[in-house]
Length: 390
Ligand SMILES: *Cc1c(COP(=O)(O)O)cnc(C)c1O
Image: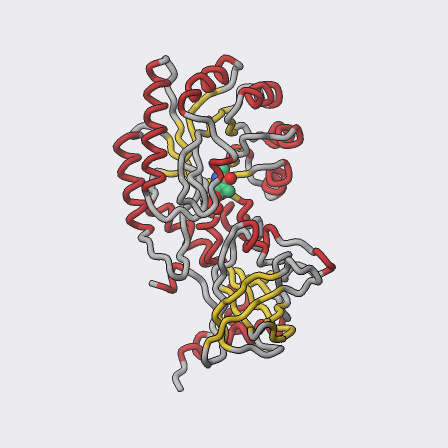
């Protein structure tokens, strides 16, 4: 069971990979990406999946999802052109940024993207000029203060203006086809989705009363990955969402935009302790990856990563810092760990989403190298040896 929901290297594999490739090293499991994709397909059978590529735009992830038939959620000209260059038809993309740039709209024209989202009047004018006739979804604002990262403070229009904006889009010659929302990342209960679906249903009804037949509902992303200490039942969540979709939107096309769920559990970081000191009675460990690198998710994604040590012993509270010369570059304080020494390895599972995607090369430190586990696993961990006992 556990094996199915996230990818985690063995100590042996982590040590051999570190020796061969050096650290910091990111190890991607494409098998896990495929499992995650198939899981969502299975449990949301009516839903067309648009992978939100901002979570992790690694080329091999995009290629795999392209080959599995996924669609994609993009937010910029760069993301649009990346996918177009891989031979992905513009039909499979939604430009899901409620505020679009001139370059983004131009990219849509160039590669045939004609699905997009909006939440304001000024955007209607831009879309009607840049992509006449585009199929547009109105992003509605929902209340989800329980979201891990709540984007509803930035995007979405209130219900009271929804139908008016859809009508304005239609009047401008756009194909005003439906509504979209994003409950916010790592949402661990069905309730915010169900509340959003209630709101969407009201808007669908109000639009119908005004003579507009909406036909598409995009339920966004936010599907959670397993986190230490947090319990939730994803299958049950999806079952509730599904049941509500069948009840309230039986003849509507449903889309979703999962980001974190697709890639979060598919990557491990192997990082080394490169410095040790003690301050205020607490050990400090400096790692070769930091806040400006893979751990950028600590800041941008407010994520608390799990650090796995291969050493045994009593746990102490310690501070973990990155390799740069900036004093901001401290990832964790008071984190429980066994004592570390220079050269020790730490394994960080489930760090595939909002990590490498937002890493920088600040201070001249390269981003962590990426390797694909399935390219190497037969060599690193041959099956018969893995099954050997004692
Ligand atoms: C970032 C984003 C997503 C993906 O969110 P996850 O929490 O990673 O699933 C989906 N839709 C929109 C509009 C987004 O901005």
